[in-house]
Length: 163
Image (cartoon, rainbow, N blue to C red; front, side, top):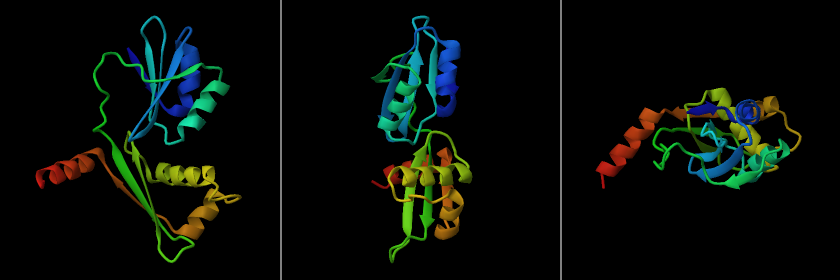
């Protein structure tokens, strides 16, 4: 049995459901995935996190978990990596050219989720020191475009047919 939760609820869900959990972190083109299991075979999987792996690992260690690299799965089947959304944000930058930021999400995000992700990433990299989300939005005039999993699959299918 697998319980899927958002990254923010992962630690609390693991504490509530699993006895003596082992937490594993893996990364792929969609981001960081966190999984946990116990000897009873119950699994908890977080949605993909767009945070850096070292940040995710630090958050989990601070929550009291031993963290290993890998992914707990019910079988040896590969995880489904074909069901993802792509988001792009065009924004006014300090340079002569506009900025473009792109990210893949395991589930179709809202525009607010995408804007929070770009803001969080820019804060983590030091590009927005002392800037609030509201100031960021006001100064950059971001334009968000989201491709659903169906649209993404159609792009992949059409590009593979043209080769």
